[in-house]
Length: 170
Ligand code: SME
Image (cartoon, rainbow, N blue to C red; front, top):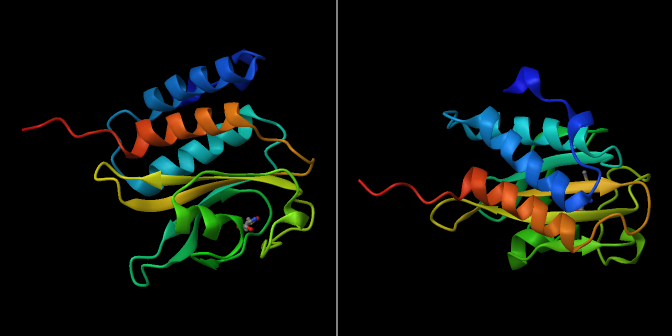
């Protein structure tokens, strides 16, 4: 449960750390259907589990626009409010539906610099149980090449278990 969550107890090995974190997140969120509560909790637990996560947050698909992201729950310095599909790393993840790993954001065409200290980032699409894109998860670091396939797998697993669990048939 949330009051028992102690990041210091998580494994040093990154893959094991993600697996343990996924279990902790599932335990904390059990029975909580609200998407904002889920996103805020994931962001808090990720940011406390990985010290190099400089900016950790969700950009959600704005239902009023359909092709625009608007900032959701996050931890870090002030983020941009809106990102059009196709713009920057978040917009690329939303437009392509593919996870984006960027070792050096200055080399990424159209990168949106919300905070000049962000150097590398990973952005993962978030889908609901019907496979619809509902948001992207953006994690930025102040060091180059901070993210790899282990982060992609770990973050995707957490997002899938939280937002895309197949509902139990009636
Ligand atoms: N880096 C993102 C913009 C969002 S912020 O960094 C918080 C991008 O280029 O999509």
